[in-house]
Length: 212
Ligand SMILES: Nc1nc2c(c(=O)[nH]1)N[C@H]1C(S)=C(S)[C@@H](COP(=O)(O)O)O[C@H]1N2
Ligand SMILES: [Mo]
Image (cartoon, protein in one colour):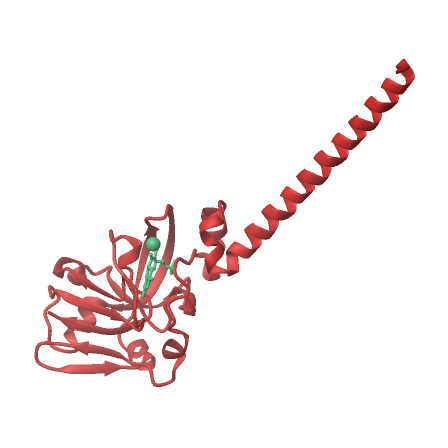
């Protein structure tokens, strides 16, 4: 083997290697981009999405979304013109549609959503103070409440709100955020917002509130 031949072989091998490396890293880049993009819209890809916290920060109204309305299967019920929030007091039950809730005195609370999955985002929420709403059925502000969402299944379909949270003037049946009506992904037509509660208990897509 001549030194020239060795040199030629080496040069070819080097070219092959760099070509392979280039292709491999280009392939990796494409795969990463595809995964990252797909993870934003395809729920079953989420466990593979290493960039989830960053991607989650991009949601409607500048707020992340954990469970979407389609994942929760509430799109139809939440956008139905027949929607109303049922408030079950000890003495009577009253149903409020969105217009009726908006016609009650409105409060504003600056409160964060803090998700156990590792993100937290502050927002300005508008709606009816829970204690004000309870007065509509003659229930005291310090009432223990059972909150039920429109979901038909799911770990957080039904949650209990302790009396001290119901009485807190910052606790809202929120109808809006950031000066706009709630986006469907943030719980339209109405959701719970309460101070110092984990995100999982900030129930979206309300169906009923019961004094227990
Ligand atoms: N009905 C219902 N409400 C829910 C959830 C849910 O799965 N179902 N997810 C909760 C979780 S885990 C969080 S962190 C917050 C996120 O609120 P956002 O999507 O408006 O940011 O909603 C909460 N409310
Ligand atoms: Mo969460």
